[in-house]
Amino acid sequence: MRRKSLMDRVRLMGRSAIDIVAVLGSSGIFLVHALLGRGGIGGGFQLLLRQLHSVGVMSLAIIVVSGVFIGMVLALQGFSILAKYGSEQAVGQMVALTLLRELGPVVTALLFAGRAGSALTAEIGNMKSTEQLSSLEMIGVDPLKYIVAPRLWAGFISLPVLALIFSVVGIWGGSWVAVDWLGVYEGSFWANMQNSVLFTDDVLNGVIKSVVFAFVVTWIAVFQGYDCEPTSEGISRATTKTVVYASLAVLGLDFIMTALMFGDF
Amino acid sequence: MSADNAYAVELKGVSFKRGARSIFNNVDISIPRGKVTGIMGPSGSGKTTLLRLMGAQLRPSAGEVWVNGQNLPKLSRSDLFDARKQMGVLFQSGALFTDLDVFENVAFPLRVHTKLPEDMIRDIVLLKLQAVGLRGAVDLMPDELSGGMKRRVALARAIALDPQILMYDEPFVGQDPIAMGVLVRLIRLLNDALGITSIVVSHDLAETASIADYLYVVGDGQVLGQGTPQELMESDNPRIRQFMTGDPDGPVPFHYPAPDYRDDLLGKR
Image (cartoon, rainbow over the protein chains, first blue to last red):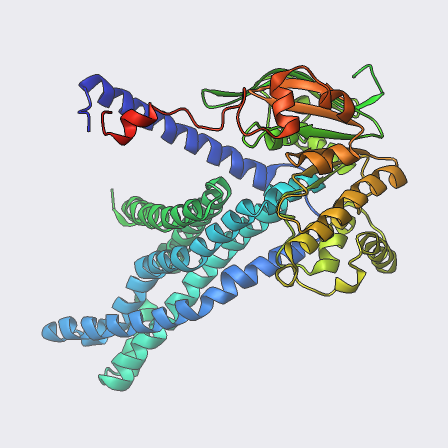
């Protein structure tokens, strides 16, 4: 293979930068058209309900099971560390704060990207490859309104709710391990938690995080589906991109938001 | 507004590029109202692209696309979707909505664009399905249909709103002789019975020539010729004659450009 000259490399870098900006621009226009453009479709509420079921309700099982296990593991690890300092009564507080501030929103968003995000991308990509999106356009129905918008709203609504459910069942799993198994006094477990968890600082900040993650993950998923090359390879690439980009975006944004919310500067 | 009402669709000086590659260069096409017009050309000549330009699913890099007196590329997004209600398209794959049964597929345009009562929607859907011979398949899902049946259901859906213009993208590809004969008759029948304008994009010469009132032959990004099927059969243009007679080699080469065959085999390349 021919070695690339320095100018070729510079040119390629420039090309990639232009491509990235172009994708950001087109995905932004896509989002604005889908959410704000005029000409909604009759029966939009039914479409939203159907998507809430497929995106939200169908993700419930993996969220609940993961939440319980992560809560249980947190309690086990927390107990073994805190017991060294004689503070095992604080395990409830540790489990709750970890889940509400960090693991609830982050792990839910990662699981959501893998379960619902990839499904959204594959579904829309398949509709594109089978000309269903073109067909909608020619029937005079905007696919951004009929296909994309209900899925976006369903993602925006589902993920924060799923993150809260994740935290709640995680705390329950933690209490089961700490109180029922390891013998931490139940009164101190819940009382310490109630005294230390603040609604605005902890619960609300966690919800804000999950709202931001919901926006980013769902946007990436539906845009990748809509923008993919309409072939089986193209759909598979788009699905992989959804999981990779969404996961990286969630982790990066989590650091930025944690620094802003809890960084004390 | 376009001056000539005799034409349902007019492409004026249309050019279209994909990246740096030019697909069409300054093309003029006029589709007469109320007639069946065939657009023919070899595979890869951009026929489907032409259909997508007429439906404004693609924007030309230059030129105007007039449909029923409206220059589609200049319309706003919502006006464009309104304008498309006058058009029906039969896609190559049928493009049925896979999560809806046959009835709901045909009812779909009626449900989203009209406020008709349910019993009237049912009557219209059954009428349209009867026209394509599939009233009995009303409860089937798309994956239970054969390729030919899918296309006929898609045709019923395309005529659900009684469009003024009906476009067919390669309607005869992959059809058995019976389904092919049915489709050929249906296209002509629908055109004459409903008084619509039909545009058939195809490379199937015999079938298209048998129903078309007027033909365009496209290739190399241009209109190579136009006229009635008879006129094109008698054309002096060697490219058109090769296409109409189906000669394997001629101005349109059989072989993709390649180095010398002998040198290639002897590894001298």
